[in-house]
Image (tube, rainbow, N blue to C red; front, side, top):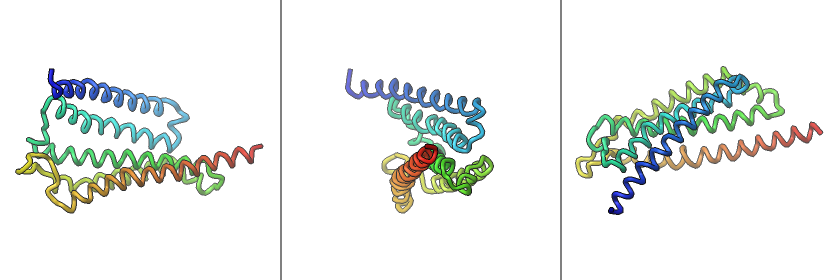
Length: 205
């Protein structure tokens, strides 16, 4: 048995295991958040529900295709131009929505735990619905250039951006918007939320 074959088998079985875990885990999150009345009425939970739904879509469109490509050697992005463009669109859009929801949930927790009545009032379901609708619309529009610039390279026969500037932008987007900025926001507002809780406990003594 060759190492390549062994790697393919590991990719298939381990990959599909994580796919199932991801789908089931996010599905349980959705059921718990939607079935419990206390959770249904909070905007933070709403952000988590949206994030879980998008996570499932991300797993199906991205990770599953990766497993099929690496495990079975069937890479549709090398043969079907439409899927080459669509997959990149889904990856960028879904991942952006997920990270944004996580940031919004963290910020919302800061609002909820604040002593300031105005800040607490910002945590409302109607407001969360509007913010989410606007956010999803922005990210959906943001991903449209994938359909314009991504194509199957006639040289390498791989799906890639045919525009150098957009390729550079995608790298910046990955490092900044999908990595550094979400981490920074969650650290800052996570700390502020913790501080709010500590202040509340001190005042309660």
